Amino acid sequence: MTIKQKSIDLKTAIPGPKSVELLKRREEHVPRGPFNTVPAFIEKAEGALVTDIDGNTLIDFAGAIGSLNAGHCPPNVVAALKEQIDKYLHPSFHVLMYEPYIKLAEKLNEITPGTHKKKTFFLSSGAEAVENAIKIARKYTGRKAIISFERGFHGRTYMAMSLTSKVKPYKYGFGPFAPDTYKMPYPYYYRAPEGMTREDVDEQIIREFQTFFLSEVPAEEVAAVIMEPVQGEGGFVIPSKTFVQKVKRICEENGILFIADEVQTGFGRTGKMFAMEHFDVVPDLMSMSKSIAAGLPISAVTGRAEIMDAPNVGEIGGTYGGSPLGCVAALEVIKIMEEQKLPERANHIGETVVNFFKEFQEKVPFIGEVRTLGAMTSIEIVKTKSGKEPDKELTGKILAECHKRGLVLMSAGLYGNIIRILSPLVITDEQLHEGLSVLKEVMLEQI
Image (tube, rainbow, N blue to C red; front, side):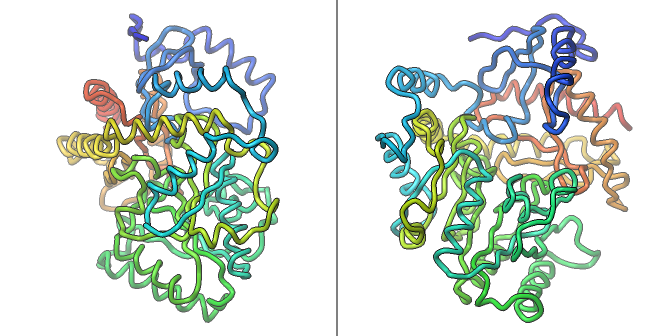
């Protein structure tokens, strides 16, 4: 499929007339709750390019919120899906089993961190994976308390929402929340008090763990700590290797399970197949989804075999968990990741973005920080570099203007002032530079 750029005025092209008409129908028939990033409707897509129903070509820097590391419609995935569709669609693994489920479990047991014996089972969404990781941890340990982190995001279902930190739009008005869930600080070095080093920040939080066990919940009642190796919705905040290792050590010393939520960070995004590999930490349990299957709805929980076997028959699962289509797509995605070396490509993308911004960052008074791990890149927008006050309004203005010019971008962060870049890892250098040039042009117009 070849996508050709329509001859248009990029400053006013989106939304086009067909999208405007569909937006009216969306407003009439779909509740307002589901958010939409760009006011356009897709017609077709390939790699990192999207064509909308008005014929406009967009460069995708959002990747379905990190679900398309292997790109839109990878040919091998499409071919595998077509072949599977001709065989059977969904007999439900709980009724009639099928080999792709077993093959994918074997593959994830092989490639996830750690050489210990592992087991894997599948669900439909990242939130489901988180919910079930918590269920398994509680069943195995016989404990109830769960610790997550400030600014963390783990999903919109009941337990996942309880573990999530940002109140609006995720939690406001939806309480009460699941009991026995607690939050600890997570290092945010850019916003540390003046004079504090990264080491100071890490040590302060580790001390708070010890105080927490004295003042709130004893360690022997904590089932698990769940952590995003890099916070996603929280603003692409990256902790130090030392911090992650110290949290894991606290878990080991107290019989607490360590759950890595790799829903957004997994499958090549950070320059490793899984982000935890950067920190030399082996989690007890991992939740995965998003880019596992090129956008198809499937998620996984992988963990130590003895932990995964704690639930009895019938205590975990779901009708649509591990659909055959999701399994065959995921097997092809992993093959693409390995053969095309997409984790290495992620490092190149991240370096390109950071170097691009270095050239003009000092000229732009509202760029507070550019940070990246692999191709998980963010730009923090502030009112002044010295004050670091978040500027959500300007962030929204920049994104809206980029959308008009055909660049798909999203925000993130507790304050809504983070521009995040999650382009497919198959994006070409030319497409990457074109998208960055649009972003630069828009930013310079705001000075």
